[in-house]
Length: 480
Image 1 (cartoon, rainbow, N blue to C red):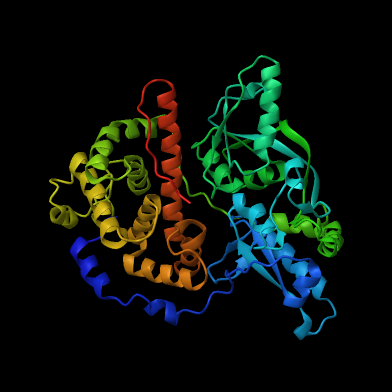
Image 2 (image 1 turned 90 degrees about the vertical axis):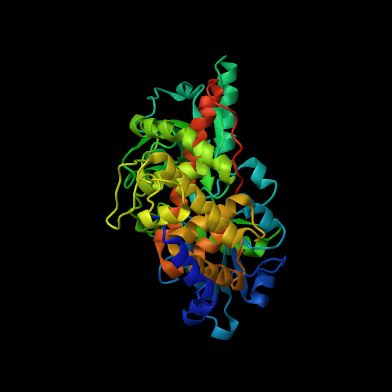
C-alpha cells in the first residue's frame, strides 16, 4: 500500500541513518574475504577454512535470530568438529561461511577467495578440469524433469522437443540439456529451448515458479524434486524422464590440495546422503513457503492484458520498466481494481485516497489514475532516495520496493550495516536482503522477491508473444 507521501518524507528526512544498527546485536557471521591460496596445512596455520556456499532455502540461509542454517551449514559444522577433535581452543581451525552466487563459486575458489565449495555441485568433466572433488556425498543422482500441473503432459524424453526448460545457466543441467538436444537433433526433432533464469535463482526458486505456473518445465536433481514436492503441491515430477542417471554430488576444492582432500574424503564417506545423518539433514529443512501465486492462469492473464497499455503509458512517462510496475501491481492487488484494503487503500496499486490527492493524478477509484499514482509514486521514491546511488537501474527499483514496504529510513540503516559486514550496499539480492532477513524478518524480503519473480514471469509471457509475432521486443533491466 502506498504510504502518505508528505508524512513519510518529513519523518524519514530527520531520522538518523545509523540509530537502529547501533542498538541491534551484531550478526553472527563474517563476510570479508582475503585472497589466500594453499592446502589444509595453510588453513590450519591461519586457523580458518573458508566455505563458499550458495544462499538458498535448502543449503544456506540466515534465520530471524541471525543464525546461519541449512543443509550444507550443518554438514560443514560437523566437518568442523572432525578437523578440531582433540585440539585445544587455541589450536582449533574455524569455518567461515561465504555466501556466493552459484556462477561465481568455482571462479572464487580458483582465485583463492575460498577453500571449499559446499553446494549440490554435480561432478562434470568440465568442472574436473578446473577443481578437484571429494568422495561423493551422493551417487547415481538422477536429473529429472519437473513440470507445472498446468503444463502439457509429457510422455517420454522426446516430448521435450520444442518445449522450454527454465534453468540457471551455471548449473550442470545445462550440459544435460545440451546432450538431450544433440539426441533430439539426431532424431530430426526440434531441440528443447533453454530459458536462462537470473543468476541469483537457486533450484528452489525455479521450483517455486514452476509450482506457481510462472514457468512450465525445469530440470533438477531427483532428491530436490521429491523434497520440495512435499510443500509445492502443483509440481509434477517425471521420475521416468531423466536427463542424467549417474550424477555424483561432492564438495569441491582447489587443484593440488591432497591434505584437504584427505580430510574431506574421510568426512563425506560417513556423512553422505543415504547415511542416517545425511537423510536427517535433507528432510530437516522442509519449510512452508507458499508465497508466490499463479499469475499465468487465464483469468490472471486476462487482467494483465487489460492493463498492459496503461502500464506501458505510465512506464514510458515516468521512465520505469512497465513490466516491473505491473509485477508490483500483481503483488499488491492481483491487478484487481475492485480490491479495497481495511486501511482504505484502493485498486490495482493500493493507493490511499489522501495520497491520490497529493499526487494530483485524478480519481484513483478509476484504474488509469490509480496506476498513474502507483507508478508516479515509485518514480518519486526512487529519485528521492536512490537517484545518485551507484546502483544498476534494477537495483534502484528493488531498493525502492523494499523502502516502500519497510520504510526508506530502515532500508538506509540496513544498507549501512551491510557495508560494515563486507556486503555490497548497492545490491539487494544476496547482500542487503540478508541483513533485512535478520533485522526485520521475512516480509520485505518476500515482498521484493515476489515482485521480481512476477517480473520474470511477465517477461517470459511477453517473449512468447513476441515469438508469435504479437509483441514488440522488451527492454528489461539487468540485475546482479
